[in-house]
Amino acid sequence: MNKEILLKDIEKIPKFVMRDVAIKAPDVKEYEGLTTQQVYDKLKDEKVVKEAWQEEENWKAVTEEANLVPLAFVSKNYQLVQFSQVFPKLIENIERLEGAVIYYGGVGIMTVFPEDEKLLVNGGDKIGLVAWNSVNKTSSVIIKFCVRHGDRYITMPKTVAGFKRMHVGKAMQITQNFLVVVDKVREVWRSIITEFEKIKVGKEYAANLMDELGIKDKSMRKQVLMEAEQREDMDLWDMFMKMLSLIEERSYKSDVHRRKKLDKISADIFKWAVASRLINA
Image (cartoon, rainbow, N blue to C red; front, side, top):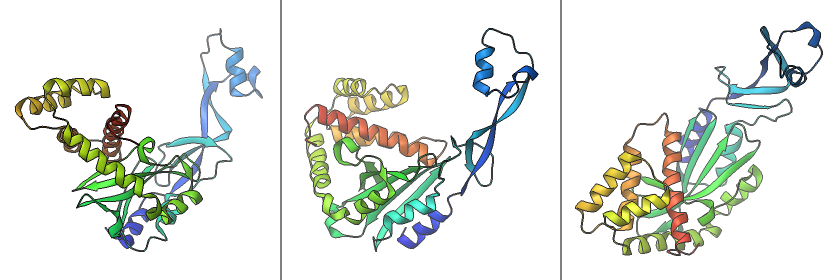
């Protein structure tokens, strides 16, 4: 979608409010005036039969405006920031772009690809940015590089090519100066594809690699090993794409859950490639 539609979708993300919270505390007259923790400390070895709700003045629950499901518990001084205050700022100085935003349970992920030929790599792939934000993190956002490979988004972990969590203001500078910092990403991406395609993968290699990556999913292991056994020309890039496709085909609670799983597989295999000196990053 273009920038105009993306901004409209960001506005559709629920607004958040802070609500009062209470916890169950022993309903014992002699403990009136004590804090909840003080009461529990005094009753460590006693059997409490009756309980009552006690409001906690120093804590609030963050919920979506339209429901009461708590997404985070924060101090009363927490400055609540809406997604509509964060994501639009990151792209306000990118004139033309393609992008998408997904949201679930207080977590939002925005992926953007500025329209610039300098971001093209390996013929048809394109470098972009992915921004993660959550309602329980004040004015901060995680920015990572990603590459659109066909219809697939592949995120690079920050240890390979990325940034730490940062304040929105600094994140804005990153997106504004995007073209200045993509050379490393371009080199790393080319290296990943080139080196992965050199490594032929058989059943034993695939099994050992999944062990090293900590992949215990029986269904994934079975299907990857079956393909490695049946194909004579399978390489490491093919294996990587196979694992991603298996995740994409599954049902998840939300697109955010699926994206987290995809990003984890990518992060694990890229970090393994760096540790194995397969790629330099």
